Length: 362
Image 1 (tube, one colour):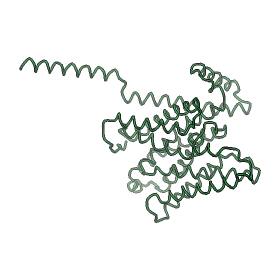
Image 2 (image 1 turned 180 degrees about the vertical axis):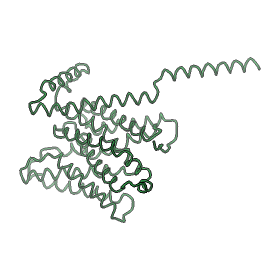
Image 3 (image 1 turned 120 degrees about the vertical axis):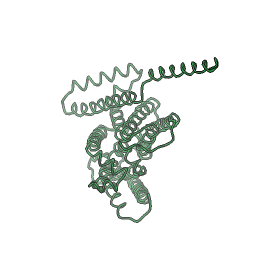
C-alpha cells in the first residue's frame, strides 16, 4: 500500500473520530425532546396555578399564595428588565397562550393527518358568529353573557351541525366546510352590523379578528384552562381510537370502533380549542396554530407519538416567543405568533435532510 493511501486512511479515521466526539457532545434529539416536554410541563403548571390562584383569591381563599405568585412575577420582571408580569391582566393572556400552545397543536395532529386542516378555520368563523350573537343577545335582553361562553356554545353546535351536514351531503371535498365557513362569517357580520349604533358593543371586533393579548379576561383564562384539561384527558383516554380512525378508518370500524362517534368527538374538541385560542390568535389566524406546528414536526418526527410531542413543543415555543414580542412591541399577538410558527417550519424544512415521508404508526 502506498504512503498516500495510508495517509488518506489515517485522515479519514481522524475525521470519523472527531465526528463521533462532536456528535457525543451534542445533545441527542431524544434529549432535546425531553427537555422541551419538561419545560412545556412546567409552563402548563405555572399557567394552571395562576388561573386557580386568581379564582381562589377572588373568593377569599389562598390570598397569600396568590400574592406569592405575583412576587415571583415581579422578580421575573426584574430579571427580564420589563414591567409586565407583575400585573394580573397580563397573566390572563400569558396563561391562555401557554395552554393554547399545548392544546391546539395536540388536536391539530389528528386533523392534519385526516386532511381536515380547513375545519379549524371553519369553526373559528363559527365562533366569531357566537361572539356576535352573544353581543346582540346581551344588548337586547340586558343579560351579562360572557362572549367567550356564547362563542363556545355556538361553535360546538356548529361543529356538530357540520358533522351532520358532511355525513348527509353529496357535495365534493371541502364544500360543506366552505359553506359553513362563509355562512358563519356572514351571520356574524350581519349581527355585528345590526348591533352597531343600536347597543353598546363591549369589545373591539378587530381584536377578535386578528388576536390581541389585551382581549383575554379572567373568564376567558378560566375557560381556556378548563378546555385544556378536558382535551388532555380526552385525548389520553381515546388516543388509540383517534389514532386508528385517523390512519385507517375502515380497519378501525372493522375492529369495533364507532367512527362517527370518534369524528364527533374530534370536531367538538376542535371547536373548543379554537374558541379558547381565538382570544389570543384571532379568528383569521387561529387555524395556523392547528396546522403549522404539525407541519414543522412532520419534517423531523419518525413516529406519530413523536410527532405529537414535537408539535406541542413547536407550538408552545411559537406562542411564548410571539406573545412576549407582541407585549413588548405592542403588535397583534396573533400575527406575531403565526409568523414565528412559520419561521420554525422553514427552519425544520431546511434542517431536515430527508424528503417527506409517512409517519410510522407507533
